[in-house]
Image (cartoon, rainbow, N blue to C red; front, side, top):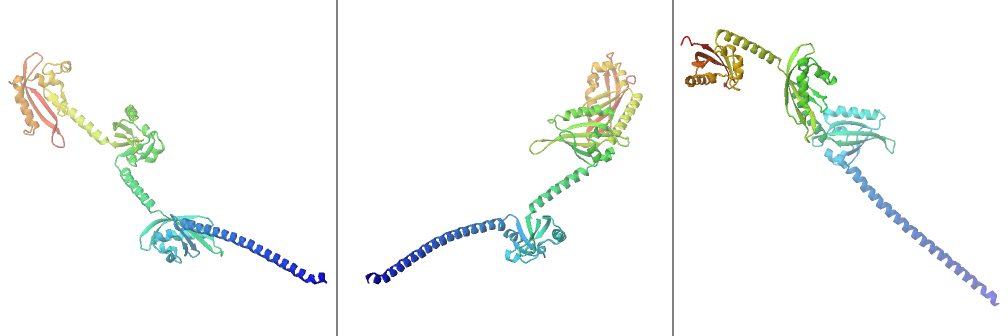
Length: 430
């Protein structure tokens, strides 16, 4: 009776224990699930931080990049742009989207942009670049370099990524260099004289085209054949030029000058006045020598003719008078004709070794009036000089002379440079 009566109670107890165990298992599962959720939340928060960092990084790399980024669709419409590009074009970014890029291309460069875009869409080359002027919203211009590449969007539509660089400063610098080069070329290429620049090792770095008019050889011929210049120097003048070459090897020497002859391409003869000097950069580095060759052939011919005329004049005067004298008023050098000292009984040996001069042989009593007459003419007070005086001959006696002279050469300011005259023996007349 007793055991049978207790069976229902035992069953209830077992069921209760089972229920407790089930509740405990469920609670444990809930705890584990809660822990898993917390771990997932932690991972989500970490991912969120990474996404925020990536977004900030993307903003720095894309929107704040030092160059402009654009995305165009197949029709050339802007579908995306970074802030840099919008700022350069002077447009709010939202208002930049859905506008054709061609709207911001300068009118005169539209053809360049069209060819660039056509080439981009027609070829499989990954990169295409061009330089053109772009127009801001306010109408101002800036130079830009466009580099584009084709891409495929998620929806399989074609797109084109454009990188825009502002090259206005570079273009301004290039323009200044171009203007400087143009000025240099204008000055150097169109100079009348033959100008050139030699490197420190003697090669031509520049040769003006005017060399052809002087020598018959072109600038290209001198540049391609380094020994051509030396080969056209007259054989009799090569020693002079070689000595000049030795001088210019010393970079401490400044300007050097030499005169020599050259033989032209058509076998003609030219006289050259050559000047050169060393050139250095801002840091003091030796860059070679700058040279100029001037054609003085006509001047040399005139000098030769003048010398011939002077010689004829002297011969004529010496034949018709008792002595010729020619004084350089700058150096005070005097030329005395042969008859000038022979009429006094002196020889060429006497003149050279005794240093005989008019001043030494002049009678003391005649010196003042004669010098006054000379000075009056040199001052322009008389049309010519004329005076009578005595000179001591080799025998110690006094001979009377009539001296006449005239200034035959003056400077640009009118100052007398050369004084030419004759002496006539008038002793018997006296």
